[in-house]
Image 1 (tube, rainbow, N blue to C red):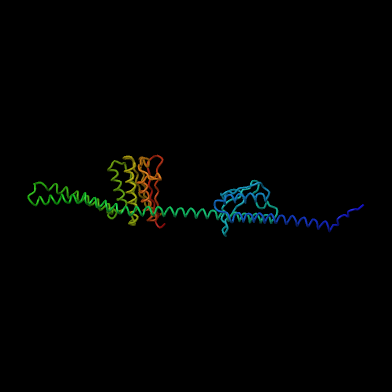
Image 2 (spheres, helix red, strand yellow):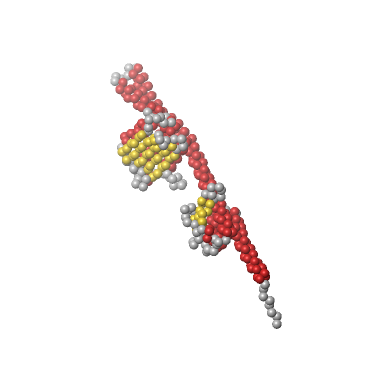
Length: 365
């Protein structure tokens, strides 16, 4: 009968070493598999697939450290393992949340900890790339939208020039020319023994002629800006609204210093357009608040016009997109006027009725 010889101590140690080497090789293979699969999935992922690939990587990482699953939270203040974008600053971009696991030091094996750190770096690089691509896409969309708006406004400017020429021509023909002709006829009749007392009609026609010429000139370039400045010019526009039955509340503080002519003109035209929209769309006389302020300390110039009428609710004709054509064009023109001088314009319907137009310019911005 054959008997097995007991293993010698040196043989036992050799078997134990082989087992340890085998386990170490398996662990290294698991680490390499974890990192290679993460690198492969994340490096070739398109933006549309990135979220799905990130979830798969997180699931494998959770399994690697002995947990059923986890998730990525985009709030850097959340509790979990911080995920940083690549670079010297290592900006936090997200947090890996694995229920029951909160610290890398809980991983006993140092090489496993290093593998998890590398995996977190891969996640951070992928999230950072996804964020950058989303930002580039957003900026590209904004640029394309701005180009469309610019093309629209340029087209409007050209047509506005033609409209202005037609308006001036029509007013010269229908108003000034007619009154000048009537004045000429009366003067001619007076020179040939015309009726007595014709001086009053002559004075009236001459007065109306001068008024029409002043209105025509003001339409081309508001002389009140040159004569009195932006504050009185806005007050004059508000006075016109008040004369039409609107209850106008003014708060004008333009400061003591002169305003740049381009800024004055832009804000004056914005005020003109805003008040024109109130006349057209407020649904009749209502309360209107007009304020103009300049803060020399902050360099902020702000024009605010708020009406308490029907606002956008009564605006009629719309285009194919459902936008109100007249008001949309007016808003774009106001916005582009402010953009041209480095400012911004906000047009906002109010919940309690009416519309607020807010034009803001920061000096030196």
